[in-house]
Length: 111
Length: 112
Image (cartoon, each protein chain N blue to C red):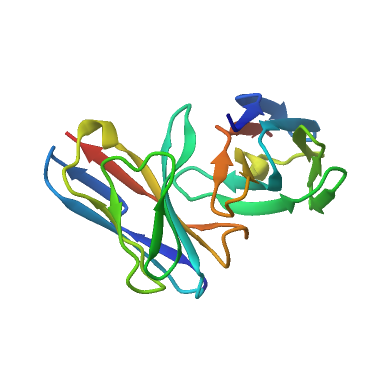
């Protein structure tokens, strides 16, 4: 069965303390892996798409990487405004419409 | 401004009273979908549409209906809501089925 698991569920960091969020997946035929950011009371906002193992994408303090079994979202020197829930989603199989979301990681950055 | 608009933002209703949640996008996207978000379960797909008059079931379609008569609109219909449909609902659209999703700001539904 296709599955996407994110860890940890919640993460509290001090401002400037770098860390990584994990998204592990077991799917047949990965077509793409997406990272989204969700703020309270809002819909998820797109961050990155990764298509193949070894691929990396960067945006400000965030860097996403992909292997054959998992993806990492690295956060370097985070600021309080990086506090949010980060969602991972996988598109797999023969249907372009099949998208499976993980449960998310709630990230909190203390000043 | 490019956006996905859902209405209403909040809705409280009673069991069995039919309701519709509207969704509209102004980006000329082909693909639209509905999700529900529940604590610990993440986002689960209810229905999706690859284009006008083309809709299909997602992972949790029971108790829901959709229609896609126009490209920009994709309403979610609950014919006879039940308390287990209390949830946070999101509409999303994308250029194609394998493109990044643009989400609305959600509809929080409570069924008593």
